Image (cartoon, rainbow, N blue to C red; front, side):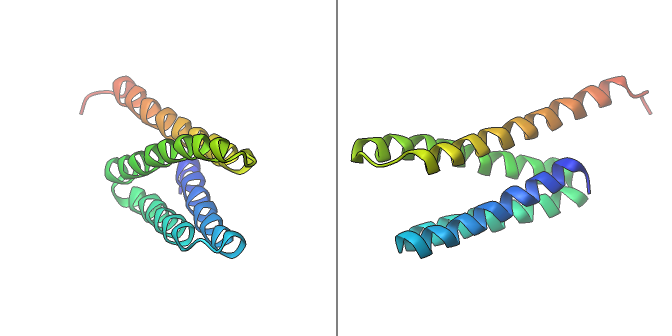
Length: 119
């Protein structure tokens, strides 16, 4: 597995654990469903990227973008409620970092393709 695939798998695992923690701490079934759902889908995309990198990384990119949007929205909700924004900001930061890693991998692959001799 490449470093990006490993990073993606760890990110998926973190989402699964976060969903479980959200359920245990806040008694939120939505946290459990969303966290585990997104986490498993991201884990699946990481393993899919071994056989079909274009599809696996694109699916992971779409899921990660959805999480970036969700956490950005969630921060505004939490701020309006007067609660601490530490957890959603941390999750947003992690999602943005993952998106950056996926974009870096994408553009690195494009550059390698340009530099390699034509078959």
